[in-house]
Image (cartoon, rainbow, N blue to C red; front, side, top):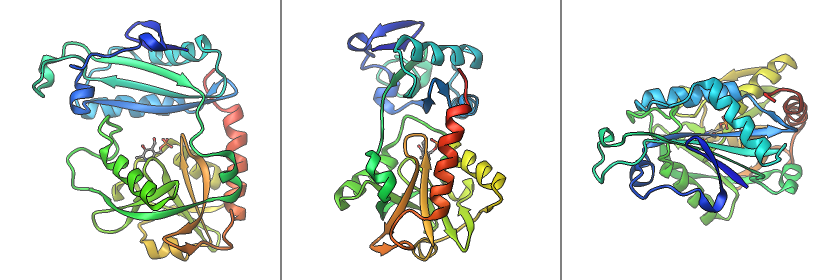
Length: 287
Ligand code: PLP
């Protein structure tokens, strides 16, 4: 396996970063998780747009153009002989001194890792998963917008730890007002009487690229789909619930906080959208 690191490809064992990198010392940096299917990098343009937006928001200058990064992502896949892969693109503030001031960091570190990864075992896509809502909240009043995919993911990690403690694969994060926001690294949709709802960005959810793709696909298929603010109650009484994300793809949720959702198995709308998503990713993407 080779990893792209600052203008060269290096072996996995040699891909090392200084302990003075502010990405390590302070979580100062931004990232994207991207996926390729059958050699097509899914929605790479959108991922790069979000990366540059995140970087702009935290005043981090990415030392490549989007075209260069596009080529580097594709090259990383090719060099690793990967067609179906999870790609991690990281831009950290770079090496500085121990103080937090980014002015001491001369040059960002840019890293691209590609490998095979599946977040959930295959069987869970057939059965659906159980989730719980957790105490960790998504704060909408933070100065750093939840739209920024920064290297500081402790909030999301706390969500995952709470999921682990509850013995379930994923959890539901509410915002500081108690409205449903998202999972640890995925967006949520609920279906009630054939109407699909997903929380808007301002609730505190990342506007996921998979989420947006599913919204497009659902609209094309004639589903009534809307952004809406909702509570856990609405999730409990939904006919179907599913999560979307680059790593999670589309996965049904069949139990939330002990309440069985619908019939307790992936519902027809979720299955229909999962099938359409699987078709879409095979054909849509940067080669
Ligand atoms: N929410 C958070 C906090 C995430 O980190 C992610 C993963 O990127 C998502 C949602 C899902 O977004 P996407 O579909 O773009 O992967």
